[in-house]
Image 1 (cartoon, one colour):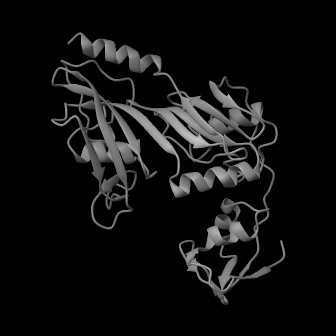
Image 2 (cartoon, rainbow, N blue to C red):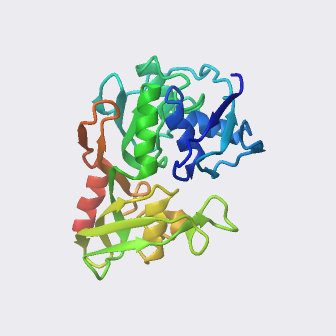
Length: 306
């Protein structure tokens, strides 16, 4: 694409450059501008812009967009548990063990491979390797995940996640029992300085907030909690609950340890149960739920027998 110039209107409030460009050029998604920023194809007053830069009224922005190549991923017919679907988006209840999108070491069994087989028009929406993907949940986490079918839907959904206007609730089985019935964890999250595959709380991290409510106690050894997250940091619930002394059952990365007196969890016991969002085209409220998976129910039954 040829370079395009845009002057931010005088008096416009200071905002992130990707958001400003997406509003000024609605035919392109915010993700497309983020890719351009990452590739060094955006300038502010002649200076190459960083992804986190903000612009104000009167500044001139020049940009070109990297060419979007058709996805070369092979569609693979994999059963999906579809909670909601129309011509604009699809919401699936992801199974445990399924990776959301391809990466180093993954096979042809990711959610993206399955989506390409079900939805023929996803190529290029949100990136070559992540067509339609608006957000992600960890491999072992089950539950609701939203996928856009059109660029307009992707843009609108991405804005809802970025601006935190939707409701995201998870249920988790945790080690030990909190003394309170509910609480708020408001601690920044950053990548661990030594163990780069882990995250940690502490100074310098990105703001993160998790509200939790106790749902059920299993003696004094474990509990079921509901968590509402107001940010979407990597491993947020796992890191936050670890920080208050209650790592998720099965989460060896964040401090869970097996006990001969306790049933062994099959995975990290976290489930994205509830999602409320505005439909990206109609604006209608979508209030979606995913029932607890079988392994969750089975582990809870075993815990009740202790």
